[in-house]
Length: 73
Image 1: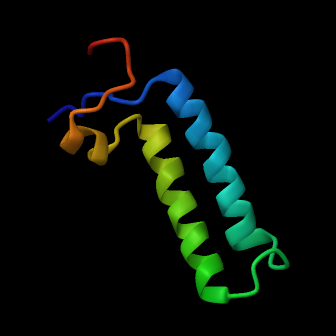
Image 2: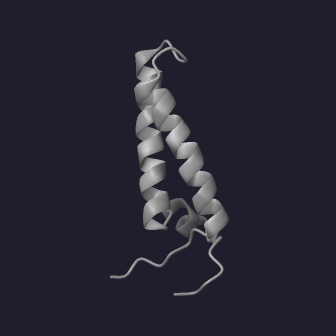
């Protein structure tokens, strides 16, 4: 089964930037957020978002019928 890409280039770039910031705040810089659980959740969500951006497929987009990818594969 081939996963059809549904994330466009602008969406990809925004997700990468935001994901890296979330990973930095969640796992690397411990001074911005005092609550360890909140930091961990933010870091994990950042990793998940980064993975989705790299793969180019968002399951939530599929459920809602949303697609930011202009090319059809």
